Image (cartoon, rainbow, N blue to C red):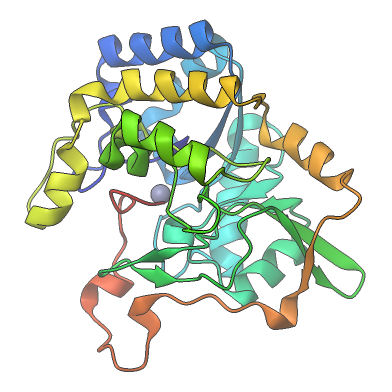
Amino acid sequence: MDIEADYANAQGRTRLFDEPALFERYVELIRRAGVKVTGFLVTSFLARYGEGIRKLEREIPIEFALHSHHHNTATSGERGEIELAQKTFRDFFGKEAIGYRAPIGAISREGLGNLMDLGFRYDASVFPSIRPGKNGYWNTHMPIEPFRVTRGRDSILEFPFPALSIIRLNFGLPWIKLYGPGLSTALMRIFPPPSVIALTTHAHDLYAPHLSDGVTALEKRALLRNSERGFDILETMIGRFRAAGYEFAWMSDICDHTDSLPDLPSMPLDEWRYFLFKDFPWRQPSNTASKNTPNSPSTSA
Ligand SMILES: [Zn+2]
């Protein structure tokens, strides 16, 4: 789960941590489902919600990783930003994070190089698919399975966002909510996802976020579709994955497992190419691209 402000919440608030009923419902679901959670934390979130994070830590099996400090796609790969996130994490948890996730998957080659320099074990940023719009990307050349990115003797594991085989449809909870659980289950059978996936949710996928201005009608529809059923759909899909033979583990366990795979694909860092629409040369740089995004795009990071 990405732990950040709810989508398009100008006050930077997250209902999951503001409303005890939602928090309890989440805790109960995770316990009942018997799964482990990795929380990708926007570390600036700790200033307001540090107590909530401590409580979550006591209530469910969770480990934490980084989701930048400012949740700004323009800076999320910069060394200073990653170091600030790691320092804030270390001050709070008394240890360092081993994993990183950039907002909307915006990890550049330089960003990955910085993660390697700083000793990160994994990155979980890449969307190996297509998404139109302002926060869009086109990365069908990227593997959908986990892979190793290498630079000389250094390397880092990359865990792409979940995508279905062949058709490369995004398959995290935001998208599953859009398709609905029935169609999602059918799609999963016909186009099985990879054997190792980081099943992705945000807090705001579980309920209807309080939307501020500046959300387009289409985004609003996507966000609010099945929003009353977010908890149920998550639990249903955990069951579907389990029925398909998946087990649930922390990302650190997944790293151990992936490291032990004999035929793990790899890619030299020099060949890393990641395309965001906002970076395309025919796009005017807009204010929104460089502004802090207090939260992630609805149906992505
Ligand atoms: Zn995010």
